[in-house]
Image (cartoon, rainbow, N blue to C red):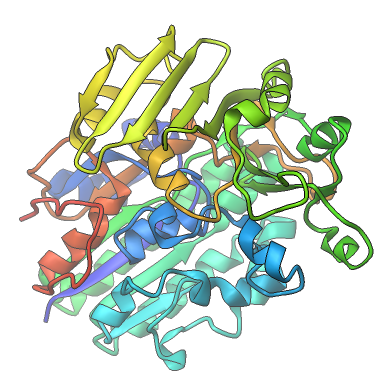
Length: 467
């Protein structure tokens, strides 16, 4: 019986994996790759846990399933009822219980397409029967422990659950491993303590493979290993809420959401992964009216004066997105089957792309090895969400966008458009013949093809040819 095991090595960095593989510090992974494949892939914007799971489990970018960040604000819903549960969200805390129902209902999850599935330490479980969420009741304890202490016990528990699940002949296993990500936030993503966790993963992977071979099921099993985002070390914090307040705005933000009981707001700030954020602005007396760039140039220009801010994005009057950095300005617009890109004053990304129309594949190939891989595609998909901010900011390397209420202090961050956050490994125990680069959204159709299951909805990725 064919089966698929997907191991999500949350926060894994390609450069660290490459170094450890070269030094023969990951023997089991190296052996798997020698008979299989290792390609690099681009994640999504925001490159952060939660939204970056949608490619693996739904086959769509997060903006297309209306999941623009781990925190978001809905201007139209807030204008109708600021106490309604659809007006704002933070999946860091109690509101994580709304995760599944916040996803667009039009798209089926992989669990709805493969009923004989199990999930381990994952929040995106729509379509999964309760008893198949193997950590439904324990995930809160383990995630809190991992977040505050960096404990790797969550990964040991995950592999234990996975081993038991394999004995029950389930078809699809989605297993999240949070140790590297949690420890990276606490001590830095290239610290000796984090590197040790890569090696612990390799040991557990070796045991998993040995068990599959012992049970004579390895040849029928597709193993995929990837990550939702990378990491970069953080040494400086920029309080984006304080900045917007300095522009005369009253700002709605987490965790101080109780203030809406007695206070009126004319702005909202929602940070994800700590290196990207949505900024929402009230238009006069109304939250429901959209803002475009000309209405808030003062804020955009002020943001770009700070070293913490790398890229600023905003909607324009012609349905496109304005891109501004200290390097230049550009416009990008979705033209259904292509992307129109127009650099205006130099190029904000330092791409070598002249004005013109490009396919989504063109964008991936021509920007993959730059500082901002696949950014044009990722910007457009994010602004496709009606929960997207009027302004979206991507932080500079070494900075994050959240100072107060961040405990423990983050020493490493993610979420931005930079390659350190966007590039992730994509490893398989089978040969991938179709291309040397990919997107994480290609995983979903690849799994379905391996299991001879048809996708019933539109998807954003393309199946990787494996054998």
